[in-house]
Image (cartoon, rainbow, N blue to C red; front, side, top):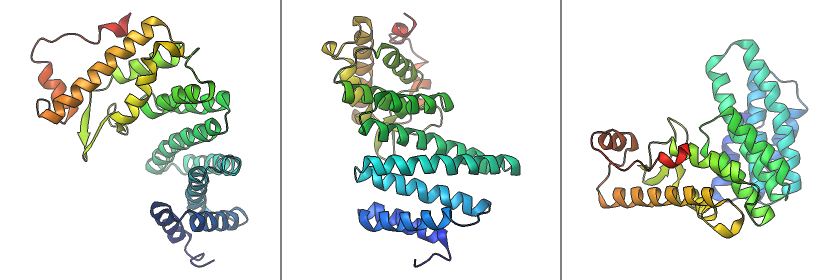
Length: 264
């Protein structure tokens, strides 16, 4: 295959094809490079490239809704990633290990989404919960865990604990902020999750017909109102786009403690 002498460039090309929507070509290249590397003797560099290309292969199969194939690729990715992490630990490469562990969390979320798309709720919940254990600040994993239940079961019955966990997690954020033109929420330096995505799930948590307890629904409604209010304040210029600065300013003046519900 063209460029096989420099696999890293092939990975870059695959990413470019995915971004351009040229999924068939991206899939073929990812499969060929993955197969080549899986059958080759590898060092640390090639281990890293194998993980990268398996990640792109899994992603493109997921985008194409080829769930069975995506699951197979994801299992190969999980195995290759374990080998890479072990090698990085033995080498004592702290920065590379930290980056690898962070990417592993995103892989766990992708694994969960694949299982959710296959209609496997328990399997998807396991992957999302593992991601949350690895990164307690991961908002998207919590949203996906609730969304998977809603999508597969058609309700949120039995999901009180998951929703409470999401509400408490969002309550730990500094609030809505705008980064690069995107309104979202995050905790500390974690990834920003758009308010559109958050509200998509919160709307369901506010629906009393979906099987959640009255108290949880009320908590969700309070959070929804808070998010919408902060969005309006940012858009009208009444609130700083930087959530940390806004929180610091808010702390200087007395305000309604909308966090009080989280302790009940």
